[in-house]
Length: 577
Image (cartoon, rainbow, N blue to C red; front, side, top):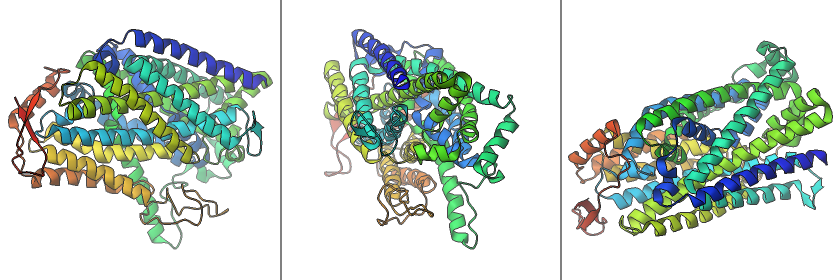
């Protein structure tokens, strides 16, 4: 009872503080710049904290710690992939920030003639990628609260079973995130992320110090204890989860190795295409501050992902794989169980309850902050890009556009709630890998070619986005993630569909190895095969703007519509007035 009271108390405290921030942000949101970009008033340190908060998600804190605890060395590869991804982000961040105004579509549409088509494609990609990422966070919320409330299979709480409690939690998180975005906009969302990042770093440092302290701050002893607890030294070697050698089956061995390469490509290339990461750089006043943001974020993210090593291996050594899988077969609760074990060792039952409640509140704050950022990016894209520039031809009233953004947040949040309930038994880190693959396949090729290829045009943007997004979605549906994967020992389904339902045709669990090159190929082919001629002057303007920041954040010039040079049926073209 004490544990539950502490947990609810900390949850309530965080929610009350963030609601206060949300109301303050609402009172200080006066125009589109405030709602979409927080008034571009954040410093490099503040935005760096918020950026790290956006990136260090529930999948990182819960999912990666769980994968390391169950898969050892191979699980740590997730951390490496997320960290290396920042190198590409650092290359593109200043160019993207200078070339855009509020969204990724601002960058993609700046130099093309058929802007409505480009913006529509960018909106579809943004919403799709964000919803998949949202699923990961909300599934993590269900697993988190089940542990914190002490609800195990067969037990009830307030008349709810463990499964029902997960569903209720997902709905509650969705409702709160909708409130944050609709009332606070980017300003409120950013401050929530800053607070969350500070709490998450504090919680991770505390757990890492306590774990290492149990082993005399000797990492080798910790790894040895984890290997012993897991049942063998293979736990510290590659191949336990990815790239497994299957004796007598060279085809299966090849598929396993290709699946690992596919996952690595998705993690490394996907970050720069994530819509909520791209939009984060529009909240600072200039390119220099954006670079400072990245420096702060790299330091925080690097330290965090190194500490997941202690969390994962520490959970194996001190909690045990059996106890972890009994609570959650996917391992999502390993970090929370570790917190309880460490607190109990340091301060008895009260110490265990206190540390679990604190780390649980941090994880809950992590989920709320990240989902708010994702919904903010999606609703901004729908309102600014689709409503403001496609339906209203770039001439909406600001009050109309902000109203549509708030309505969009409600619709996207509701959709995410429904999908998260359906997918609540999947590992959250793997869902994030799927979102990264989609971002790398659909968004990254279009961004790179828009910035660096003079011949690129609207047909290339649209073909690249739809080709990459469609390919990745199709391959996911036809992969073992959705159907056909079963536990070799128990026969239980490890896919979205139950055992006995098998329609998978694509052998890899992550589509990145195929969908990323396919998205790039579609973008190049679309540009080359189209009869549309790019505007060289606009490309030169974009180059100067992206490299120097001249004219950054200025609205794009209004356009008048003219007959399409390809004739009826090809959509209206645009040219500067």
